[in-house]
Amino acid sequence: MTAWRTWSTRWVVRGQRCAKPSRRIGSALGACVSFADQRGRADTTSISVYHERADGTDGLLQFGKSKDHRPALRQYMQALGTLDPAGIPLVSETLDGNAGDPLMYLPVWRRLVKVIGHTDWLFVGDSKLHSAQNIAEIHRAKDWLLTPLQMNGHMPEHFAEWLRQQPKHLQTLTFSDANGSQRRVGHGYEVAHTLTWNDPQNGETVTVPLGVFMVQRDSFKEKQIHDLHRRLECAEAAVQALNGQRGDTPTEREALQAQAQTRLTEHQVAEYMSVQVQWREQHIEKFVGPGRPGPQRRKQTRTYQVAQVSIRRKPAVIQAYEDAAGRRAYATNAPKTRLTVQQAVEASQASRVRLTLL
Image (cartoon, rainbow, N blue to C red; front, side, top):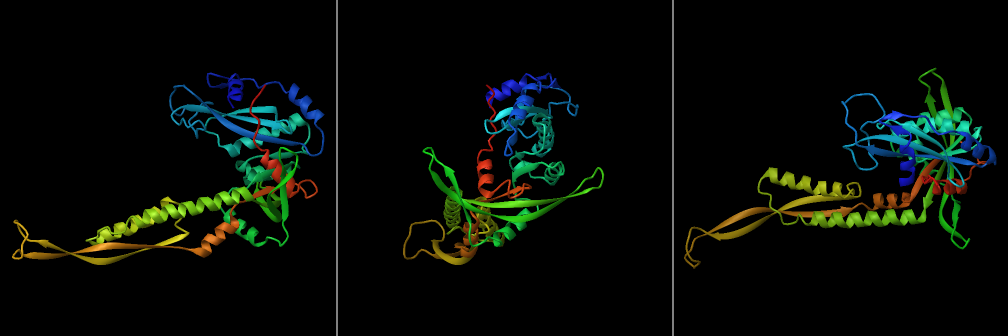
C-alpha cells in the first residue's frame, strides 16, 4: 500500500491532475495475456494531504470518507486496475477526494478494456461494484463481471428467497493447501436473477440475466455463530445487572424498561431476545427520628418498587440465523460454461488487488 501511494502521489501536484502514465507497457501485457479466462480487478484508496483553501472550491482535493481515518484532512482518491494472475498494474485513475467507490469502477473498467484490447474477460470487484448502473453498463458492452452483493435495498428479501431455493445436493467447494492437497472450505449453489436498469441518458432499458452464487464458507459460519452466542451472553449479563434497581415513579420504571431494551440493541441481539421487566414491592422498616435503637423506638415501613428482569432467547430466530450464517451471494453475468461456483469462489478469494509496484 505504501509503495503504491508513493508512486501515485507523483502524478498529483498541488491538487491538479497531471498526465497519466504511458499505456505502452500495459498494452503489451494485455496483448500477451490472451487466454479466455483472464481476469482484471480494481480497488481504491484515499491519500490524505495537508492543504488549505477556501471551502467549496472545485478541484481534486476534497473532504471525503477517509480510509486513513483522517477526516480532518483533504484527500484525493486513487484507483488501481490490475491483471491476473500476477496482479500486474495496468491502469491508475486519480479521482476527486469526495468520489464514492461505486463511481470509480466504470472509468477504471473502460481504461482496462482499452489496455487489454477486448471485452472478453472477467472484471472482479468488491461489493462496491454492485450497483445497477455498473452491472448494466458492463453487460451492455458485452463484458463479464463478478461482484459480491450488498445487503441493502430489496436485497435481503431476494437473499431470503434464494435461501429457500437451496437444492438438496450442494456443490462442495475446495481450496488447495500449501502441500497441494484439496481441503473443503464450504459449499454452494446457483440461482437465477434478473436486474433491470433504465439509462437516464437515452431512456434505454437494460436487462441483465444474472447467475447468483450462494456460497457458505465453513470457517465464516463458525465465526458468525460463535460471535452471535458471545453477544447473546454479554447481553444477558448486561440486562441481568438491572435486577434489583428501584423504580419509585412511573417515569423511572419506563426509563429502566427502555434501558433494558437499549442494552439488547447495543449488543446487536434485539431480534434474537426478548426482555420483560416486572416490579415487586419491597418493604423496609426504618426508625423514625434520632436516637439509639430500642424497643420503644417508633418504626416506619417504607415500600419500594424493585425491578425483576427476565430475558428469553428466541430459538426459531436464532436457528434461522445459524442456517444462513457464513453465506454470501456473488452475482455474475458470465455464462455457466465460463464461470462455475468453484471458479467464482477462487476468483473472489484472490480479489485483493496487489497494490505494491516493484
